[in-house]
Image (cartoon, rainbow, N blue to C red):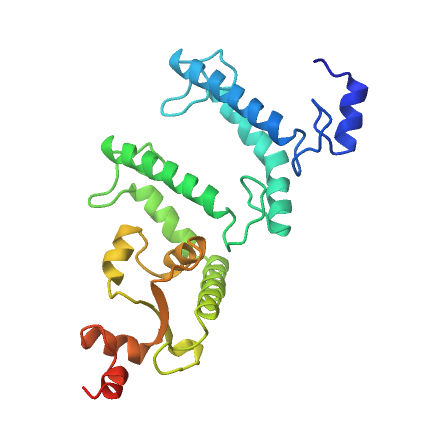
Length: 265
């Protein structure tokens, strides 16, 4: 059904679906039904163009190597992101919404748990392919440095960025904020001796499988692991211990010396 310009504008101003007139999704022009239908149609067109070896955007030119769009469409997308996408992202962050899907985001990240998982899975697949092709996982152009996944140029850029004073402060503040959130969720005190001094507290694996678990989730420690905990909605197999109880538990086959004394061991 064709919609006139006047009707289209009227529905848009009233935040109604521009196709059927039903309530539209937040910050969108379509309702749930037509947004899903529209997305499925776009995906089918993209799959067809990929099989034909054409840009998924314009369907005219071949895509750039290792990409799905041609050079001209990539440049147009970059310009559009700068002009339109960036303000939308800032608006969503300010309103506590996921920058990707626009839905409420209870995590401390820019993406909600579902979008983060999709993004991480996609990134891991791309990185694996770059490693197979012996290319830098960052730029995808140069061969990586020996025993590393990134080329010397990207490694140096990363070091320079990480050591900028403003970035160091941001990471420290973020680290402190997420750590405090986790400690508060798990009771705010040592689960063994009731110590409450934040600087004395640590996150402990109840089942004594910390190193194995961190390898499984590919998060060694620090901010990355903290954010994983929040995104996973605070798993039950974690707890808060002070560093003394944590070390005692490690040295005493998984049982803190406090509990051994209580049990008469």
